[in-house]
Structure formats: structure tokens, C-alpha cells
Image (cartoon, rainbow, N blue to C red; front, side, top):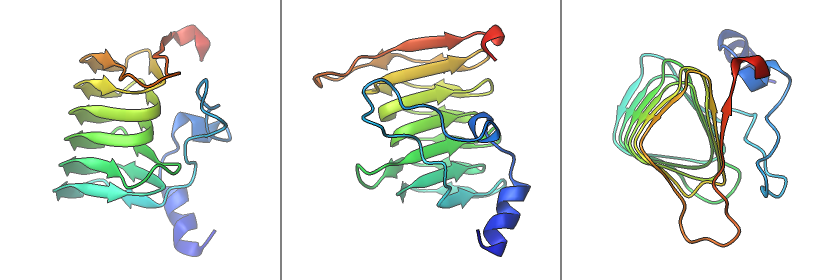
Length: 162
């Protein structure tokens, strides 16, 4: 790990699964894919971007994006929205881990995890797995497209599961 990356890693709070030593297990049928544990791009707190954003790899949002946030290809892409993060627009990625807020449609081909401070105000489309921790909110619908082999699952984690 380079000097600046090490400083950033020490300065940023860990997401719950990072603190436990790694990425969560893959969703059912995920063919061994896991969310990115490496952050390739960081949007820092206080940063506001107006316009669409494309990314590859791991993206961590601690600031605000007003526009769509889209993964550029079908490789292993993960969006992590921290507690201070906010997206107003459509989101498309294989994995979405949300502890902040998304106002818009969310398209995930693998899994969506809504942590205790996470808020989705909009629809979740085409995902295999949705996990909502106690305190997390989804104000919208969960829709599955006509892809073969995809089952939408909704699991609510209770406080006792922690």
C-alpha cells in the first residue's frame, strides 16, 4: 500500500464488513463474485458533483452526486455510499452497499445491502439479493426483470443477528 493510500485508509471509517476482515459472502448464484474490497475512486465528504459519473472497480461516495452513477462494464463493480454520501439519480452496479442515501432507481445485477443508516427512495431493479439491516429504509418497489435464474430475495437482519 502506498503512502497516500495508507493515510486515506487510516483516515476513512471502515464499513461494517471491512471491520470484520473482508467482503461479505457472495449472493446466491453469484458464481463466486464478491463486492470489491479495494477502493479505486473516492468522492470525499464535502465534494459535490453535478453530472453523470462513470466508474470501474470500487467506488466509495462520501460526498454528493447529482446525476447518474453508472458502472462502465460488467466486470466486478461495487458502489459503497457512506453515511454522509448522497446520490440523486440512477445507480447501476453489480454490488451496492448503502449506508447513505440514494434518490432514484437502483439497478444491481448481484446484490444490494442497505445498512442501518441507508435510505433508498426509488425502485430497486434486477437484483438477485437484497439485504436490509435494522434501521435501513427502502421507499419504492423491488422489481425483477425477465432474466432466467434470477430470484429476488429480501432478508431483514434483526439486531440479534449482529
